[in-house]
Image 1 (cartoon, rainbow, N blue to C red):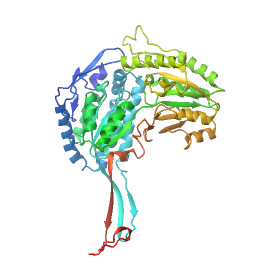
Image 2: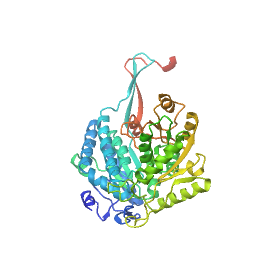
Image 3: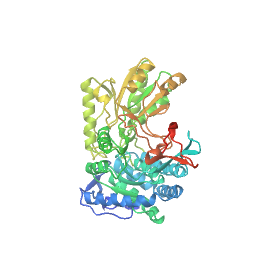
Image 4: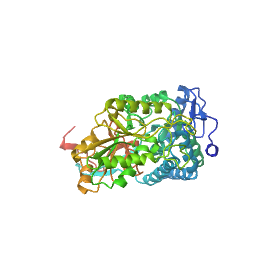
Length: 507
């Protein structure tokens, strides 16, 4: 495959690297099989304790130098990274699609997000502002400033195998931090490819070795990072279960964690909605990436007056979905990541039926020519209640639950009535409904949209959610502050030392 050659991905790859230097390791080998056709793509060596230690020590050394670079100079390096990503967009998008299973257009879109965050970070490199404040003491000046934090550990998930790393890395780098990346063990080749793309840029600019490191491996690597006091910030994306473990470990040592975890996202379809527009938002949100986005639409909360009409419209749309090889742009839906994901999908369907759910678009595993990997499933739709245990749980698969509402208050209560709080949307032409949904009495999610779906977010707006989604924010607004340490400074430019609050202390 030409894109593997273009990205310098070999049959066997070193999975531990500090940038230009690969480190031999004796950890568990990771074999990457494509969910598209079930074939082995390539293998990656996993980290062991010795190679992990070597990476962290090199990262510490790199940080001591990198933080001294002027922020705009660091931004210039990131700008060049963005240019290299532009050159490699097609190849990297193809690899994302082939290794993870999302459609080619989604794979290319993910690489575009990497390019966009680089552009954002370049501008940010000249805007790492603090504040100046008035002091209560005469002849004093107060201000606050932000300093580089240190090593940022990035733990990413398989569903966005390159974008999530870039969201963190681009901001961390312009802030003066260094990054150590543990990619998902299900998509290690994407990490290898990214390292290969940026390595010439870093080498050309004499960036210290260790500013961008990768440590491939399983759960144990994530545990090492979470418990390592030399890593002041761990940014982890994945399941709520994983996030709770990371958060507990990092919190125990009083470190910082940036958590991007599960979503159980709903769209409220008002009787005042444009139903054709709502259909597009709901369908793509539910089946895009085969339902494996944290922002995927899991629930539709539909007004009772239009429920039957919209349900039938949606079922008809599902009949037109083309499922198959995601590299073929004629197909709408690709495979799930692996057979474990297929099992979870089937289990969720059975649990929904056991609780009383009625499927109006049946699920199932596809077999035959083109489906040899065993990872292709049919997107399905069930009429359900918000209270069902399976509805309260995030299933990473294309299962959509429909439910009715009478009043907007009831709809908002249902929307908020799950443990997760990532993305939400309302489809309505009513200004009152839209504004209520966006108010303090509306959606409790980190993302709340009007007349667009739940899936997809733009670089520039801080991305993340509340409750069991973890509370982290990245890729926009003032999210950069989490990658830095804040310092308040007071300067006395007089020859006297008045104490705060009028305290007298005469010696």
